[in-house]
Image 1 (spheres, rainbow, N blue to C red):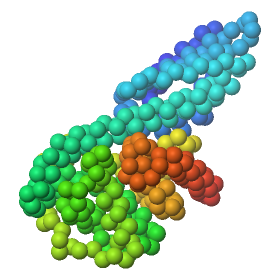
Image 2: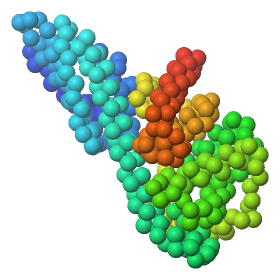
Image 3: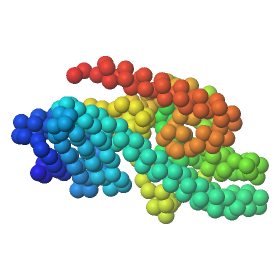
Image 4: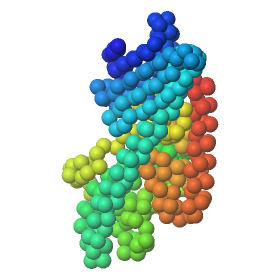
Length: 338
């Protein structure tokens, strides 16, 4: 039997040695929990996901065995349970399948982050010798023209850090933009490029410059826009296809391993603002360590290089941030009206 209704996943039931009342109880039990699970699958095209549910009734002993096979574009997830009644087994299968879906989406997300990071590092690494030559020869405009478009990869990071600085009260809202911050990074890179530490990857060094600039602005050090490079209107058109669009921050990106209820999610902009508000409550080093690891895919040792501190401290801060944010999210969920 195949059921397909609007945006739902295709579900195929297979019953073995099950009388009709048992089948009906099984269908009702699954209908209770499946909508919540299915909302976790909205990132996958509807026509590319299938669910096979097999229920087998055994007499010796009298138990029902349930198997769920969820076929997704990037993998197949399986869950099996048994109980005296199929309805009980199906509820257990739903819980197990939910955990498998979360792990699967985490894996896909981290793989995507790793690919993006690798590509960013490859492009910046290739540009490194040219930037070094421009810096040594004093070719300021050539340096700016090469580096600034490449920093489009930092735009989402800059936008997030700026909004957090505004939420913390360090910067008036709208006083500076991510473009301003990117320009400041370009200028600082120009001034320091000849003396940058060669043992730190270029992308890590640039992130560090971004944090330094924003920290100084938040402490009242004025920006110097007169030194910023001019911004050609089409400067990023050639560069954008290298990395694709940056996706907005969501709850699953903020804390991918926690229990989440997508049914009650806010609209994307509101959701992102709440996530940033939670991040803004963390100490700056801890927040940035967490964001660099969880949201941008940097390894803990890379975060340690950016922040100039031991990896053990970075790991401890990432875990502390995760616990704090988890408590904050659970508190918001509990306070949310029915």
